[in-house]
Image (tube, rainbow, N blue to C red; front, side, top):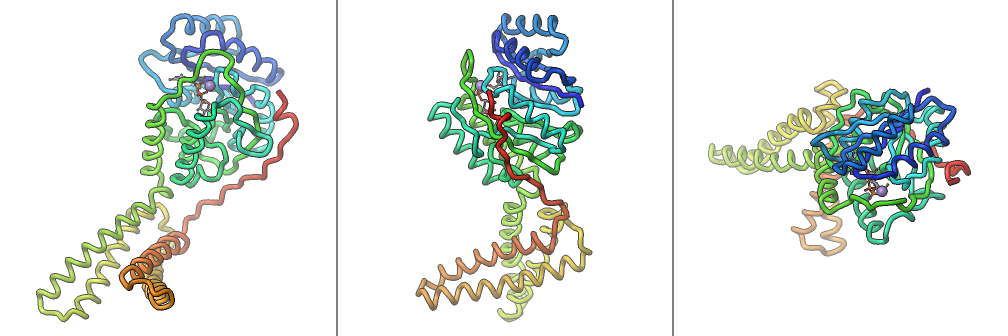
Length: 373
Ligand code: GDD
Ligand code: MN
């Protein structure tokens, strides 16, 4: 198996030299290549990389003109890489190259994605300042709250990882900013992930390019991932469909009352119509990727779920209004919230049950070799 190591660089001076030579020591006698994707605007950094690729046959180098961005540089690296296993790491020795040996071993053993993690027993993020640690923690929490496939790993914002070629080949990767691993986790094709503990190191020379602008890009990136990933946008689309149902209900109700129907009949009919339009919208938008059961069976399940939801609404409402003496309007709001949560999860698990296989994440075993340095 050939291994490609992609290293994005921006004005790294002579750092790539040390990275390239350490990788030779670590990966020899395996078949491997190091691919630098460079966006430097400092001529001496570009020159260093040029010399490096001329003198070391295992080093390749592409300088991008007029382009900037850690994420897109790595995507370019994926296109250039020829290996069956593709690793990504920084050029400043903050990611200890020795860990690659354990990563490659896990890749050969069958893991689709291998992530060295600062946040499993045996790992550490000593290379960051306390302030960066806090920012990094908040960023991770936001990412995990927003994205289901990110929630399952402990270090999704890492710039250090390895993937099997098939994970990224043909995957529509369009990262904004830095967090290419989150892009791979959400859009890549994989079944198993393996985490390995490692110690994040201090930078050998130069300084970090992290900036407020990159924090903003991170939020934009998450928003785009949520909007384009079916499993993550469902909640929001489901809530929007619910709101549309209120309008449909009101409109039909108003029309029927104006036509002379009595309030009871108008309410029953408008409720049924709104339930049906909600079903159609959820079927065609919210869960359009999960229409496995026959259409009629989906409709029946949806209606059954909604009926039970009404029951839950009433039960919760009367329980907290009578037992706890909560104001009846607030009690109804709580009832509606409980019914919405019920409806969402029931529909997700039953009406539009997704066939996607559960992801296997084997337990982490801190191995001595992976943390040696
Ligand atoms: N090609 C390219 N283009 N490379 C870039 C760019 C760019 O615009 N900006 C930064 N890089 C390269 C740097 O040269 C370095 O090799 C790597 O990307 C990381 O940049 P640093 O400036 O060293 O970032 P950091 O140390 O603050 O953050 C790193 O570590 C974090 C923790 O693992 C990054 O890898 C983060 O993504 C990661 O979360
Ligand atoms: Mn760094």
